[in-house]
Length: 211
Image (cartoon, rainbow, N blue to C red):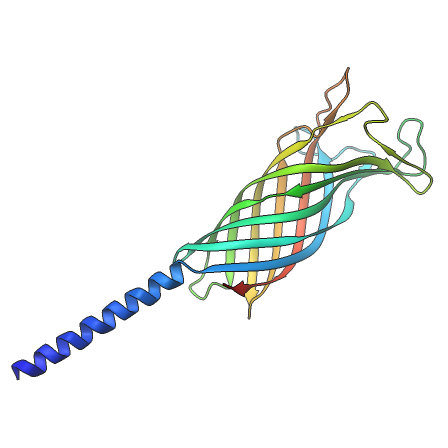
């Protein structure tokens, strides 16, 4: 009987150690996800409203996101995304006609915490910061294209935005909607500091690979 109890104890201990190791491996799991999607971008002022003569610019976004699981329901993601942002004007802009678009394109590096809302990890909430590097800044319409620098407008080389998003995953396919609101003014002139901020609503589709 004593040998039976000892054998049972050793078996239970071994199972406990194996379960703990499996749980630790799950927590330490790394994934990589290529993703692409659509931006609905605009400029907002301090009151949060878009300018009367402006409408959103629809743009493209694509890149890669890495994730490290920190705990059973928590992860940390780091992304590298190309993002077309800016705003379209519904009327002429100064001496330029034809509903021009301010094109502000960025290489963004979102660093987001991820909280899984369910045990099966299908639904997730993401929040954090997104630094960005401006790689294109111009005013463009069907009849012309001119850089902001040539117009006497200085584009801020860096951006920083707050991010909040939701995601749904099924069989490694992920759908996400994320909102980004910048708090750095994206451009200015020698005489005027515009009160604009970048604002982007982003819809993306991705496929997750386990590493």
